[in-house]
Amino acid sequence: FKANSAILNTLLGLLHERQFDNGSQRLPAPLVCLVGASNEQPQDESLLAFYDRFLLRVPVQPVDDAHFAELLQITAASAHAPPQDALIDHRQLDALRARATHTGVGEGVLGLLLQARQHAAQTGQVVSDRRWRQLVDVLKLQAASRGAPEVASWDLWLLPFVLAADPAHVPGWADFFMHRVAQTAPLPLDGLERAVTAFEQQLDIERRAPADAQDDSAGKVALAKAIAGPTAGESEMVRITSERAQRRYSPVHIEARVAQTDDLLARLATVHSELLTMAQSVLEPARAHDWLPPSWLAQIDSVHTGRCTSVAALIAQLQTTRNGFAGLPVDETKVDRPAPVTWESP
Image (cartoon, rainbow, N blue to C red):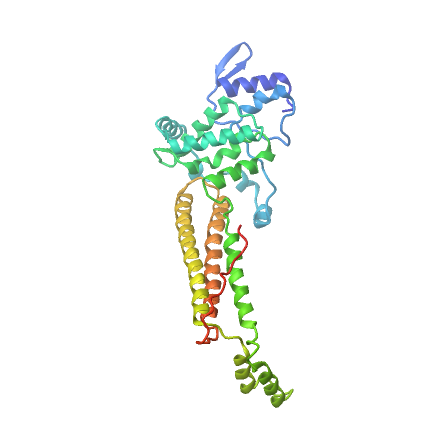
């Protein structure tokens, strides 16, 4: 972007018209791809038309820790010599372009592109009509390279690198794709966590509750401890007496607690099943996509696997609580019914 206007105009004609001005002659240029690199994006409005001709604009980040050792071991030969099977000749490229012209764009993808246009407008990003058309062309080319008859929603992983004019906008477009296609948007599971915690706390309260006032079990525990002595540890007599000092609950109370816990367990099981189904429906096409970056796939896998694991842990935690309610001491003479356990709504 710091080149003089003559060079920029020459490059603009080469990009836009595939023509090269060589002195007084205008020659056709068999341009396949033009790659540029810059340490900054253009600030001068006169450069925006030239900048807009670069369809894919990828911010390059420093090498992460996982690949740092590999960076240090790269030799000049390996850095500049791609493997032969990575090359594509003109016949293959022409055939690919021909297939791309017959590749369709379904209603689902068109709907996502309309949402993308709305996202651009809401975030104040200007995307030219030419760029929208070129985006569809490159999506078709990508789908054709995968042997697909039409563009898939997963092909839209390219959106951040086509629509973001500023590197600062790339994360927002990545989130757009992740949330709408990969379904990684946060889910309101915190309410379920609070519910499980509420039952666990209620069980702890009921286990610690002392016996009724008319029961002299507390005095019996004190007597048993005095008899056992300070160094005798937890004797069998102390243990049995302590258990008898715990409050006893009516069969109706225990049945109500278990029933309410079972209701929440059923709800958690349904949520877990839905999350497993969602994970399968997302991860299968994601893993099958030839171009989705491995780091993106790992992030998507982590989100869906983490959700399923978290809900499975809640189910196990609540099952333990449910067994605790079922094991509370019983007093068959009582008929009291407890108030339902409540928790703060999300």
